[in-house]
Amino acid sequence: MAQGGPIPGPAVRNTPPDLNDFGLVVRVVSGGGVGVLVQQGTIPWIVSDPPVEAALNVTLSTRASEASLLVLNALVAAGFDVPLSTRASEATLTTRASEATLAAGLNVPLSTRASEATVAAISVNTANLDVPLSTRASEVTLATRASEVTLVTRASEATLITRASEATLATRASEATLATRASEATLLTRLADATFTARINTLGQKLMVGSTPVVIASDQTAVPISAAALPLPAGAATEVTLATRLADATFTSRINTLGQKLMAASTPVVLASDQTVIPVSDNGGSLTIDTPQLPAALVGGRLDENLGAWLGSTAPTVGQKVMASSVPVVIASDQSSVSTSIIPFGGVRGLAGGRVVGVAATLQALLRTTYNQPTVNAQRSISSTAATDTGAGVGAQQVTITYFDATMAGPFTETVTLNGVAAVNTVGVNICFIEKMVVTRVGGSGSNAGTITLFNAVGGGGGTLAVLGFASLVAGRGDNATLWAHHYVATGKTCNITSWVFGTAQNQGASSALMALNPVVATSPEILIADELSISPSTQSVYRPFEAPVQAVGPSRITQYAIPLGSNTVFTGGFVFWDQ
Image (cartoon, rainbow, N blue to C red):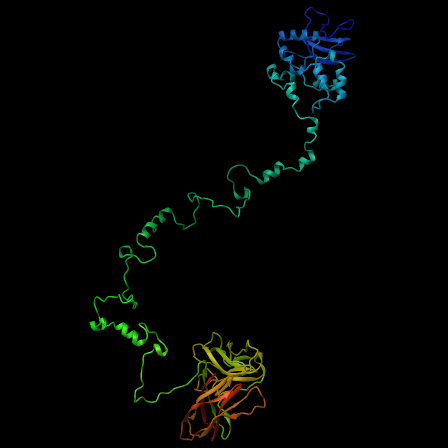
């Protein structure tokens, strides 16, 4: 161990002293004083004041060469501060920061520097330390540094030379800048690795369950595809099949564009052997008949023009024409009587016919079945006595009711689909006066299979309003209509009776009368509107046309009556009318 007074400046001394005093500063040691431990080979060296025994032998076998060590020994003796972390040649070491530079940089806020107080404490002993201030630390800290084995693996001199210079370090982020960086709490809100990988898979095609869902934009432009690798559905056409189909060029070479073309540019066709007549136009007189089927005189005289002049048109149509478009005719001088019926424009023509089984000396309406005239509007119902009178049955399927309301507005109609013996309610709730009931659709039997009754109320209630009979005309067959010789004239209309008839097929005499009343007024009397027709037991029927129609102004009900001379005789009658 070195003895004596203070050593001027850093010095390397052997214990005991030796003429080959040189070595390399290894680390600062403390043990009752301040000193520097150096070693060359296995010989420990202490530079201290007062000297302190070395506590640790550090092998320098991997450090710089002996020549470099001699230089370093000299440098230590001269008082240079050589950083232990950057062993290198003298030239390299001379570029390192001096004590003055380090002292000037103590106030630089580098993230890895010690506090100002720590640096100040180290700066006091810089005269005896060959360690850069940037790496200064306490003895306790230094004790935790790398062992000899670890130091052996540190970078070589060549590697250290490439490390950042003082100028480069000066450009690094300041303490103020680093203070603005995100805190740990902020970073926790950012996208985590697990979150990302749970939503975005690795590169390459994946199954649907392992793929990120996407949706095509609503304004996505067309995306070209190739069907070469698509799994075509069963039965889809292949290229081989398509090659046998009609090509565009083949079609256009046989079918021309729209419009008339020359023969050479037209598709050849042939008329069917059973072709119906095709109308031909003479194109303004330019039609030429190469093989006349008519005499030349007729063709040359333009037969079509002559006929056109006679008929009012070269293509006359069916139906009545005005006088200027009609062929003139004349009634033959010996023309027999021609029956005529005058019905003004807009008139509605009708026939009311009925029959009754006579009761002697009784005024009987020619109504073959029951009709109890109501006076108020109501919703009605209808049913049959036969189950086969139904919508899909063999009998009557549908019945149409013609009626007027209580004010004599009408006529209205409603068609009801029957449901056998079950009553079917009408839709109309304004049904009052019944003009007639007619079967309008039947099954295989051709007529109603039972008696059809119209009830005063819904559900078959309220009693009988009207009846469409069965076997009134012939046994075993439905009537298909009410056999009533009456007619209702709507308010604002006038009925014109043009003829009437009355008769019997049996041997009883009787007379008949046409009478009318206002059904809206309960106190309205029923009045005779035409003279009577009478038949004797030997007369079958009497027909009476009116030269001037017999009129009845609505609201009105016209009824034909029979006044039999005997009983149990069937009498029939009816009248023809039109309303305007």
